[in-house]
Image (cartoon, rainbow, N blue to C red; front, side):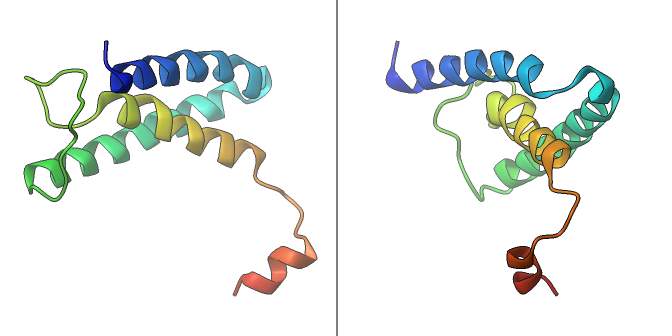
Length: 101
C-alpha cells in the first residue's frame, strides 16, 4: 500500500470519528442537508474540471469510473463545510468587523 492510499484511509477514519463528535443531535438535520448540498456542488465541479482537463487526480478510489477523487468530494470537503457552518460565530467580533465590508 502506498503512502497516498494510507492518507486516504486515514482521512476516512478521522472523518468518520469526527462526525458524531462534532454534530449535535438537535442539529443533525441541518448538518445532513449541508452535507448533501455540498456533495452535489463538489462532485459536479470536480467532474467538470476533470473532464475539461483543468486538473488530474493521480490517486483515485474508482479509476475506471471517473477521474475525480471520491474521498475529497464525498467526505472531506463536505464535512469541513458542515463543521464550519454549524460552528460559525453568531455574534460579530471587533476583529471580524475590520475585515468585512
